[in-house]
Amino acid sequence: MGIVICQYDILEIMTDVKYTDGDIKACAPTVIVVMGATGDLTKRKIIPALYKLFVKKHLPEKWAMVGFSRQALSDEEFQERMHDAVSAHSKENLEEKTEREFLKTISYVPGQFQENKDYASLAKELERIDLVWGMCSNKLFYLAVPPDFYKTIFENLDASGLTKPCGDPNWTRVVVEKPFGKNLETAQDIDRALGAVFKEEQIYRIDHYFGKEMVQNMLAFRFSNILFKNIWDNKTIEKIEVRLLETIGIEKRGSFYDGIGALRDVGQNHLLQVLALTTMEHPIEFSAISIRNARLKLLEELHNYTEESVLDNTFRAQYEGYKEEVGVDQNSTTETYFRIKTSLNNSRFEGVPIILEGGKCLGEEQKEVVITLQHPEKCLCPHGKHYKNTIIFHLAPKEGITIRFFAKKAGRGMEVQPRDFTFDFHGTDIATEHVGEYERLLIDCIIGDQTLFVQTKEVQAMWEFVDPIISAWQENKVPLEVYKKGSGEILEKAKL
Ligand code: BG6
Image 1 (cartoon, rainbow, N blue to C red):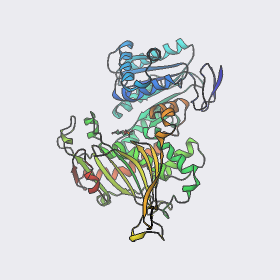
Image 2 (cartoon, rainbow, N blue to C red):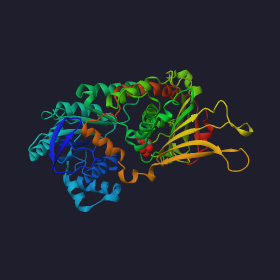
Image 3 (tube, rainbow, N blue to C red):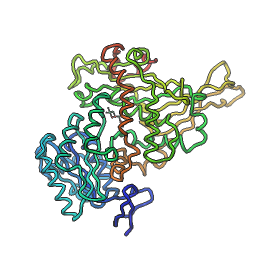
Image 4 (tube, rainbow, N blue to C red):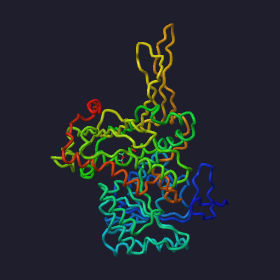
């Protein structure tokens, strides 16, 4: 029997669960309420992650999930669906007995998001669980619903008293998924509604890129190695590129995607956040506040365009056949690919071009950050060639870091050729210790660590950057090019 101290809640509980050093500490009894529980996100991400955490005994001992959604389902029917989701996404560690125990922790309350009386049924179910446990539990409300429902859900949670913890030191928290609005105005609108009901320390805005092992490794790389510290500025760096190129298309999300486009889907959030981690100053300390503030400061230093300057610095395109996708408007001008050139208004990176690029249905999956260094003032560059070192953070499909340098080719001459130092994550501990993005982020919500969640001001700074670009695009100030599905030709055309 060991005593586990919940780091962030300063709460001691007795538990039979054994923890290894790397394990995340268990916290107090917790119920996660998933609003929109019959949707795709629950099936693909939330349930498989919860199951994995359950198997690893990383969830609190007293643990339950309650699904809340419009469909009229019994507990058993909902559990059956969750079983299908677990089977489809967690094949490698599906163990019948464990899965049965996991499914027993799940119940379901049918309800309309706008119906106040349905929240009373939800409250009843939560009281029932607490009664069985004989104690008041923490409540985590996960909004796996389109943002249009956010406001009404916040209001109804509040009106039904569900946002108030049932005791002290218990908590209630809310998890919201991107997109956080469609522009600055709608994001502020959501924030006002959120802020009227929850305090900032109760709000967890998920950007799943922060849960990626390699994205966190970028911080370790930058702030644990003196080797690179003194070159991380405009005296040495020539260019920074952050890209998220996908081979997959919009899948079955036509109606959602068409109202959003590539820039809002992955640029306004994942790419800008990865850029922030690549270029932010050293946080004062490794606390949630310092890291989030360092990110925020950087995002506020982005060079924002006026609608007029968008033409010369952005490129957008749509893949052939996009307009025929289910749910997409036949006359849609939504971009499925973009490239943006920007810079940072700070002395460290002033003048360094920053390229942000994202797109669907491209020839090759490439999710990476590429730092190109200038060539040395004096260079052993035979034949007048100018070689440049690069540091590449590979986020997917293979996770790792490559440092490209130049070495002499064996033989009598003095020819130099590119060589790589490569750190391949898959050759190391990742296979055994890998923690999925949602696993990590869900546990962080439970233990109350907000480091990997986006704060409201970051959301605003990102919209301030994106809004003028989208407006100019909507006014057709930048032509919409067309590219072939599954080809990389557009990348060549997009050079800015
Ligand atoms: C999501 C976007 O946020 O990120 C998707 O909505 C995109 O369109 C996905 O495919 C990419 O994430 P990952 O983890 O597959 O790189």
